[in-house]
Image 1: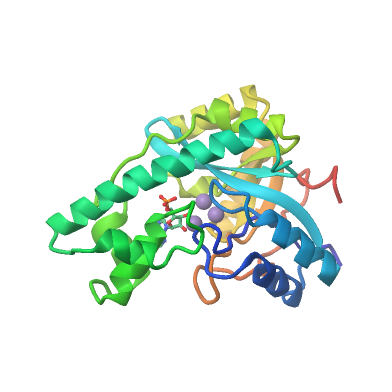
Image 2 (image 1 turned 135 degrees about the vertical axis):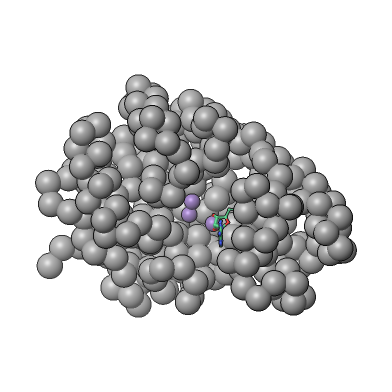
Length: 278
Ligand code: AMP
Ligand code: MN
Ligand code: MN
Ligand code: MN
């Protein structure tokens, strides 16, 4: 039996719904042996997560998922085995979180133009961590107030790229994100590479620039990938010499394609990103 390793998940410190301790408990209940919490642009849940994992006898790796702009689109870079106390990392993440609040004000203005008032306050009513607001909090408000029938519809109608209340953000650069992660002692991993709407040329540019920055890995098995994509990104990992990661990208019970730990093993022949730690 191989170890069940899940290195991508969210708590209510970003856009998940469970507390860090409750994510730990769910990972443990689902048979996960080693777990990383990787909240968006935020490390404030890691202490609680580490303590809960320790109490459960669950292996824990501190993580973060950093929002990056590359080639005009948002890319997520997961940092694993980071020291959240690192000053440059903490300052960089704080700056990104400030940008999220700037964007939220404009999103609310756009929604008001669509006839939906009070969206800022509505989104804030779903925010647990006063330092972090996400489009997901707007989606939960739109759903709760009956403006949409599902979170997916909130993105399809209003919040998704190019939709009426979509407000582009200039996140961190790839260089900054990888630099912060390395400076904090961690490994950098491109999250769910199959999700980005890049041309093959842009995807290759992302992988090559990331490689040149000494980025370590890509997610191969993630809740965002189809089985065909597991194979596709396994091949690309070998081609570029990247290590491979596995993570559910769990946000909430019953939401998303897979629950914590409920994915297939990495395909054979890959170097797992956790090899130096586990
Ligand atoms: P943000 O980082 O605030 O721009 O929000 C991005 C988050 O929204 C992602 O991490 C997902 O959790 C969620 N998300 C993005 N697109 C969708 C979608 N189409 N349906 C549901 N959730 C989405
Ligand atoms: Mn998310
Ligand atoms: Mn992501
Ligand atoms: Mn994620």
